[in-house]
Length: 610
Image (cartoon, rainbow, N blue to C red; front, side, top):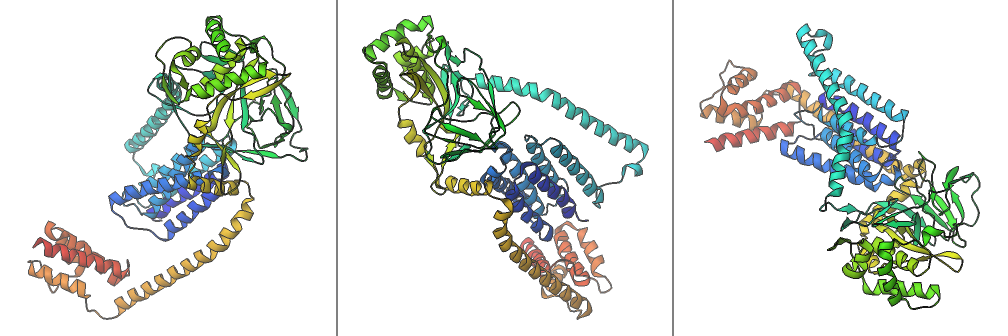
């Protein structure tokens, strides 16, 4: 078994395990075609192109994993990129026929892919797959001709050294398993506390208005929305404010909802398909007849829906002609910290003169939208309360500052109000006709209790929507549309046209390869049985060597002549070319065109040294 084929077995098993664990069959199809090409055909490249082609393979694998990645919903985007990139590098490593470390390099990348797949919740399936991969690697290396002696064939000293090395590796791995998690937590805390480290946009259960704001937007897709999508999708509700932090003052009273998947209500107009993994359902305030593609879920008095602990949110559907049963406001919905109440009350009286509550709230929203600036990068100059500083001094910030300001101003005006975080829906995929929600669409707004019901109010200036919508690229829309078709269709049905096109092409390519190999064998046999006249390129190289003082003696075989030339540094390259010529002419090894190219290259080098 050659080094290329011995290394192909672990990579093939890794691709199969990746497909089974993540259900990413399109990626497995792409990489499987590369594996077939790597076994049947390989390239000879120098060291630098090998490194570059490894990087190209990793890049193509990452792109393929993300483009068709929505089908593998068990992995987040980062893990999909790592796993797909590692498998892509492994396949390219086989295709390039590495001359150094060929049996080791592709399985190493395959192992990196399986490590990334460990982020799935596949349980016993993943453990069995890893054991299968390890067994395959050991079997492939044992079948390799240069894999080294077996353990039982070693003497006692070498066997003890091998066992000591294995024990050291196990001890190091266990130490890393024990030390890396706490070290990672400390490093993350240090990075998050650094004022220079940017935060990444996204949804979280909690709001903290920090002194320094430095948020980088993320393009990762959260879910797809079909139908007449609402502007806002609710995620979390926050009722208590203190020192720049919003939390819930009362623990949620959870009630279970069962039998949702068994009886979908008719006439649902909006459907949400999650792409990333999360426990929270994003159900808007005006949703009616909620249906989830799950047997049960939990909902609390704030109207927050989520999957039971340990499970992930499934697809959901609902109408938009109702209202969720959210409890009426309590004392926490009107509470304002005493240290900021006076300043906020003066500002609320100045902005909203006496009148109906709805009119005063609309006036507060208009002042915030018209007189303040939206920004993801701010630096407060004072140490006071973040909301007061935002209103009186900074006058610029992101959506959480605007929502916090409106909620507190409404409360000091006697209007119960809460902060709600979720996602804004505004980006439409031009190919599929559906809407796409990304992490950068995470948003915060206010729900105020007016005329006996909770109503939605967004004080953030609409300018940030124009900025976000302008970033939607054409290729990203096309890639997501393709990924959505893979994710939401039957794999067998989707693969039929691909197989109908790929099988004839693969059969034709194999037939051409077989014909070419047969012709090469026939030419090699005719060279052995036919004329003894040398090739023109070989004859010219022998004459040039004779003129340089290295003639071939009449009684000297070509193999002996090559051994003599290899001992001399100036003509060692010529010996390699002549040796390849002899192996092809008398043994049929390597194509003739390749051998003739080596002879011509050696002749050019010999003439250049002159």
